[in-house]
Length: 327
Image (cartoon, rainbow, N blue to C red):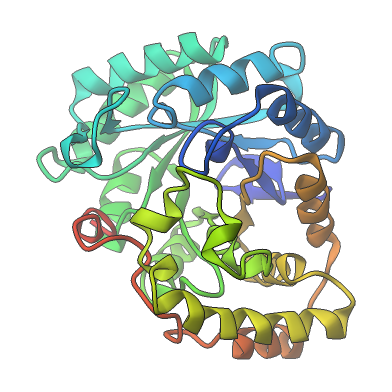
């Protein structure tokens, strides 16, 4: 697989989101998840993404075990800032960006991952109570100590990105970007391009919806958070959004590929590094193949027209979560 740059960091053109292996999308299977990670590495998908709050904590442990004998093949990214304990309801989750917590969280992540350094360390969400300069200053100390190689932000606004980058180079900004989540194109993407910061696109398949695999609420596993925490999957919105997916499938048939592959190809064409998540070998193989699809500008426009910006029914997060985005 070809490489792309996130600032000064070189990564595979597509990554693997590991969150769903441990949390949010129903029961996990460590054996299958480990096999999926190993298959991804074999395919050249070497950019792995996790976070301390996935599980919480258990996803970093799973990833650490999976890569123990292949650490030198991996560009490893994790995140801190969302404070969550096992069994804690979302309404009680906290957010910390103070220097003491930055150091504490990093040490805990390194221990769980079983490594002496993280290649890319993100602030998961911006803490409005702590100036970004203080948070990034503490993250920069981790770089000086060799515990972190590059810094990133997740779901940050354009002004915050500029302020952070002035303290220490930001290699990447991770944010939701797909055919049905395009709000970052107004300010965040232009800012990143101006500053030479890479964009990492999470949920590039619309949390799986754009794959066309879901046509009914019965298709989801018990405990899947999309059914209770995602407005776009709610009654009414679900059926309206299915029509958009069918339009995308029509375009995919023209290219003789799957809807998932055409949706990922579009994200690749925007210059981002998508990190589609999966816990199954067959899907990591399907997703990886999308990195080889090269689109013309006309083809990209045709794909975008199948799912027009602003046409998706429902917000991408619940109302109470939206204020934490784009700070």
